[in-house]
Amino acid sequence: MATLKIRKVATLPTTLEPDALYFLVNNNKLVVYVTNITGTIVYNTLTDGESASAALAMINSMAGQPNGLATLDSLGNVNETTIHVEGQNLNILSNGQLVWDCITLNSKDAIDKKLDDKEVTNNYKLDAFKKNRVRTATFVTTLPQDYSPSSDIVIRLNIIPAGIPSGGVSSGNVPFELRYVTSIGMGGGVLSNEIIDNKVIGLPSAATPGSGIATSVIFTPIVGTALRPNSVIMFKVSRLGHGSTDTYNADIGMISVDICYRKDKLGTRNLTPDFNV
Image (tube, rainbow, N blue to C red; front, side, top):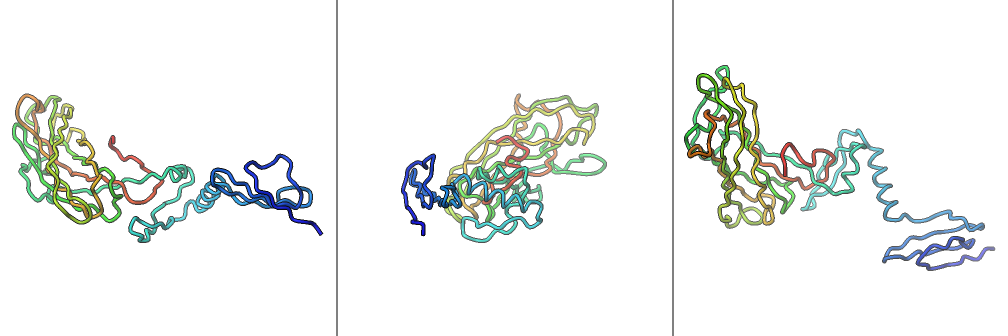
């Protein structure tokens, strides 16, 4: 009858004893090996790297399933379909990246606005930032339950030329401003001091309303250090249509405004949406 030998080692020997149980202890991590009568390893527990590879292989085997996998959010609630599995993108899972999502608001969602009703094309109209005037729209939104706490927020204003004068309009620059306040912590609190961000964008020439290409004004990300799900963001977007900095001789229609945030879940696509952050 063979006698089982037990060894505790920091490095696995090149030649292993037969009928042995090796405890490999290194950097406070344990891997166990078992040898047979010839000294050949017949069983071992997984290393960290092997465990990760095995987990990814298991997930990869589920590629294409429509319901994805379930995980827990920061509050311990089950998020079903949080990971839509696609084998070619599984490397993202090991990086722990968070997917982006956006809340889209239109001018009708504004709690206060000083905009002008302008035809864009073929009798379609949009609220517009009038040329040579200061025009504003103010919004308020609550961050959703799947917002990843303390992550930054991006405000994206989507616009298109409108109300173009006879003879068309030459290209020019337009200054836009974002002013915002945020609530502190979960579900409310004292609003922070107002923060101002300015962006100047160049717009191309356009001959008729609607012939210009829609574009976006992407403001500097709102620092989310104190933000949580249910925190409130109140913000105002403005065209500073006065002075020498506004050289675009046309009104600008507002298509929508997006509040883009990182979700409290892993994902496999669109780590960064169509904006630079």
